[in-house]
Length: 81
Image 1: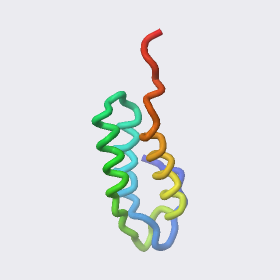
Image 2: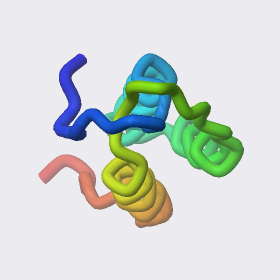
Image 3: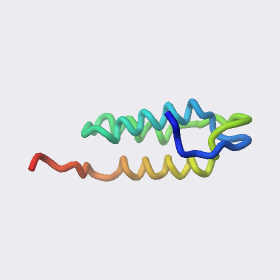
Image 4: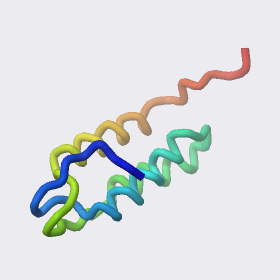
């Protein structure tokens, strides 16, 4: 997975960020309220580790905030037309 985050000294652990965002993005692609709730809980509980070389903290935090907001929105896929 390639994410649009800059690398930084003392940034977030790249594997941990990638794993979390993959889980959240998978939930966003479904209509499952259970999957979305689990993803919201995972985002809120995420204690991202910092590494000597990792993803830039502010960029990741902004991406997590955006996904959390998207998970809070009602399903906008709509039914069959």
